[in-house]
Image (cartoon, rainbow, N blue to C red):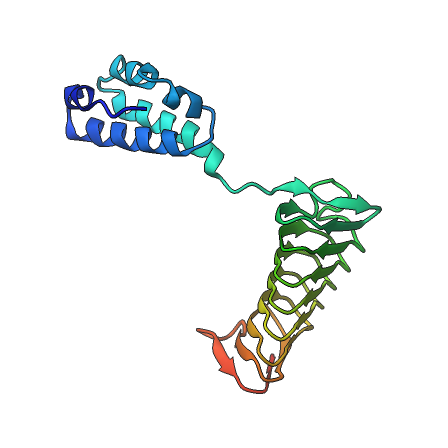
Length: 228
């Protein structure tokens, strides 16, 4: 869409001009419901020019929301599931719980994130997640969750009590876990742990920081630490 400076200068008020500029920029960059409207020369200009009044700022807000809605993070395509075992095997965004086979109420789910996929998932108790090399995993689970973050993977687990997290060499792990949970940080791994209750973390030569519920800030741990 061509920039029509004459129309821009016709819009009264600094706020209206600023809002119009922002809407044009956002709509042209998005793939949302107004993207095609923004691409049609003169159509969006006409829409806004006919409504520039005391309500112009509200119109800009509505247009911006419509254009920006497509920029919200998508959960991605659903994983391939067999029973409660779900796998993402193709690079790109993938939703481990997208098929509905596993939900926040489903126990015993097995999540496999492979082939450089960017995986998200939610599961219930006793959920087991394997994050392969070069993957990016973000999982929310209930109690007794297990996460294995393999070499060169980036992993994030938010879980309740009795979680177990294993971070391999070269991985980047972030875990927020409840009472009775444990985290193992291998040599060359980078591990960030937040304990909402009692938990333990052991450093086997990686970079480990842990924040217990009573800590004002995270602390570096050379060997091991037990949160009470």
